Image 1 (cartoon, rainbow, N blue to C red):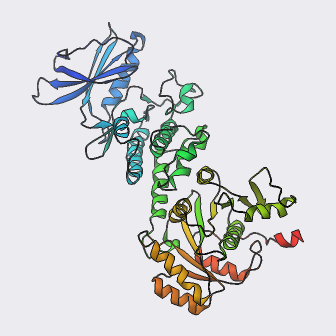
Image 2: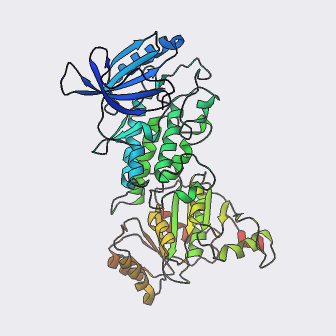
Image 3: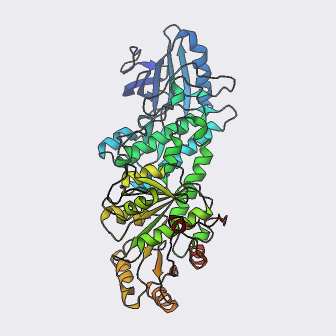
Length: 497
């Protein structure tokens, strides 16, 4: 509720033209009313009433003039301004927008907004932020939150409250007035610096996290990973994390930059059937996920995941290999060897390193989400041969899903059976890897699956070590995705000996 009593009531007339009909909403600084236009019968407007300190009336007037000058389809037109210095009351007359606030929408749908609408909504918000931030005198909104977003019946969005927007003044170190909504306002809005475009981008990150957690969280705190909806596009996570960085210089620096990242990553995720990896958006700057799934026990999924991880580590930087299985034992045994731990005595840390690859043993989906917000260029998921819902979802959502199956002629049907069982899911991104398969087996499987990304993996006894034949296959699999900046050869097993 507004702290000061309103000067308006039903039937009050503002500016000799706008008759108040009813209250639309109220906040700590203002009330908004619906009003009918006495000069244009049938036309309705929203009238926002605020009470300003007479000492800052000049600032309020300047801000109102700035708002009236704005013109964007996602902003309400502000068509009139009235001030009453003696009482401190100021009135903005703006478009009345039919619809409901995002808060009301989320409440009515139990915190659920369809996942296919989240990125379009983010792009709409970014479109208007880019407009505001790139004006000759940039406008900083400063109060982006669900209550200030109106959804029309067509699910289009509009910002509806400019109560604390301000023009950016480069000569200031801090804002004179600290305003914003807790949970959505950037840290600098509480006195650590002046707000700028990056402050609005922080609020966008808070808004996206709010949508992705069903309205439960808007700040990245411990445990939030477990509340992020599992079906959401994976590439959103690192984008949200970067938007929510505490220091402005660590965030995206402009709305245009975020728009580009969302579009690149979305294009990367939605490669069309028949589109090779080299044609996807290879300048994607986020974390890419490779998921390795074995079709049966002993098919070589873990061996292949290790080989892929070290291949990527030799050509790029920051690779994590994640054992997505809380009861798996392979990485625990490897950690015993690497760290010299007595057999059967578990280490207190689930992370260890081999030749630049960070191994994470016995992890959960929440751990994966947390890692996505970090600095890894690639995360390789070792899914084993399990096809429970959690691991299957991670496989289907990965940037590079790799199916590992036996290259033996009599076992090829294991792969075709998996493909048929999951035929309702898009499979154009899938890659099939057959250890020790013959060229004839590869050719036959390509024909049967009508899929060209089937690869025979050569004999490779030490997956930690570089192997020319294996590299040739993986070069083809990841063709065009990473630059060939090869590092020195590793010799993990030789060092252990």
